[in-house]
Image (cartoon, rainbow, N blue to C red):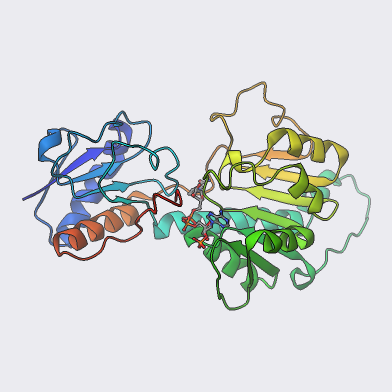
Length: 309
Ligand SMILES: NC(=O)c1ccc[n+]([C@@H]2O[C@H](COP(=O)([O-])OP(=O)(O)OC[C@H]3O[C@@H](n4cnc5c(N)ncnc54)[C@H](OP(=O)(O)O)[C@@H]3O)[C@@H](O)[C@H]2O)c1
């Protein structure tokens, strides 16, 4: 019997219990899933941040911690965690992110806001360029960035991506390194941030980075709030150098009511809804990782603690 501790909080338990039980049965796992296993008995931990578990030292038989979240910045530096940590790469979450990024890219590409603002009877025709003439930059070419970049390329956008390592993705020009970042920024009329938050990526989009963007560029940030220097972004928005920012993630969430992003004419706030982990597909990912652990196979989606993601 494999004991799986569900340590992702009562609200998630209500959503995940049935899908996890179904996924374990489908995977042929003889698993005892509970939010109440004693620490010394748990073989695996299903984890989410802010659910109360911060000290992993008592979990002496735990073989892996399996996160329900894709972003792991709040747990990756936890010194008490010596077990392997797997992050969430969920097909359902990826689909959601692709839809959010494609939708918001098309909003700005087609200038849909302009149409909505001019419904007074004046027949003023603004012809948008074709996607083939629009440069989109995607910072981060992991599970989510690659899926988004591919979809945008399928829509004919001229997509340039940036990652830590070298990439070869058909239809996408891939860059790496500081010079590569500058090259992506210089041409990105629409810039999508899908980087994890690490000591290296924190404040990556600062005054200098913003100054490299073409005038009027649009920023979409479904990655993490602290990738951007808020003050530098506000200054760039106020001057018109950045035409619009559509932001899903923030340094403080919920975004405080007094924050200048709220109500800013060049900012769209979405409340961290770009991509939610979907219980049915995510439960299968958890089950597969437990099956692999039991079979002595390497875990999927392991976090590189040194790199921070
Ligand atoms: N808003 C939402 O609802 C939501 C939902 C899920 C996730 N997210 C965010 O999206 C992020 C990305 O998720 P993912 O699953 O795509 O992550 P991932 O698969 O780990 O991909 C991360 C990408 O960032 C690149 N990268 C990391 N550090 C870098 C650096 N210093 N310089 C250049 N590139 C760097 C990586 O490069 P390599 O490929 O070379 O390693 C990789 O391409 C998550 O960390 C999370 O913060 C947001």
